[in-house]
Length: 301
Ligand code: PGA
Image (cartoon, rainbow, N blue to C red; front, side):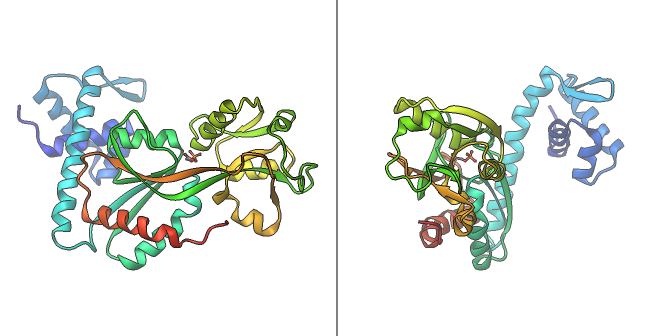
C-alpha cells in the first residue's frame, strides 16, 4: 500500500474533529484539499473510513481501526521531530504538559519559573480532571502529566514531587468551626458538596471515608474546585479539597479548615509519563526542574 504521511495527517485531523471544515482550519488547507486526501487514502486502503448522517460525519469501523494506528504513527513522527530539534539544543522545541485541575493552582507558577529558565521552549498546558489525564496517558498524547494518583491500568513511570494534603472545609459561620478533634462520625450529619466522579480528589475522599466506615451524605456535584468553594461559602455543605486550592480563601478567612480526626489526609502529587517513552530534552529538563523546584514553591502549610 502506498499510504503517504500527508494522508495520515489529514485523516487524523478529520477523525479527531469529525469535521472537514475544522480539519481544514487546523491544517491550513482548503476543504476540497482535505476531502481529496481522505478520498485518496480510502482508495489506497480500499475501505470507506467515514460515513455521513445528515450533516454529521462519523468514523466507520475501518476508520476507527485506522485512527488507532495513525495516532501512533503521527505521535512517533512528532517525537522524531522533537528529538531532531533537541539535537540542536535543550532550549528549543515544544513541550506538552497535562495537569489535574487541582494541580493548576500551582502549575502556572512552576511553568513561569521554567519558562524563565528555558525561554526557547514552547509550552502547551492542558488542565483537566483525573479521568481525562488517564486517557491522555493511554493515548500517549502528551509528554508529561502532573496528577494525584498514577493509573494502575497503564504502564507508566511515576515520581512524587510534593505532598497534597486534603482538608475538610466549611463556611466561616459553621458551628463546627473552632471545635477541636471533631469525630469522623460527626461528619455523617453533614452534607458534602462533591466533585464529579472523574475527579481524583473525589476518588481519594470516597476511598478514605469508605476505609474509615464513614457514610457522608452527598449534596450537590460540581466539576470545578472554584464552584465547590463558592458552594461551601454559600452554605450548601462541607467539602474535602486539596489544601493547594484554597490558598486565597484561607488568607482572607472566607473558608475555614475543620479540625477533623484523621485530617489532613496526606496524598502526593506525581509526575507521570508512559514507560519506555523517550523523553525529549525539553521534557527531560521539565522533569528535573519539577523535582528540584517544587520543593521551593511557597504553598499553604
Ligand atoms: P482532580 O485532581 O480532583 O482535579 O481530578 C487530581 C487528583 O487529585 O488526583
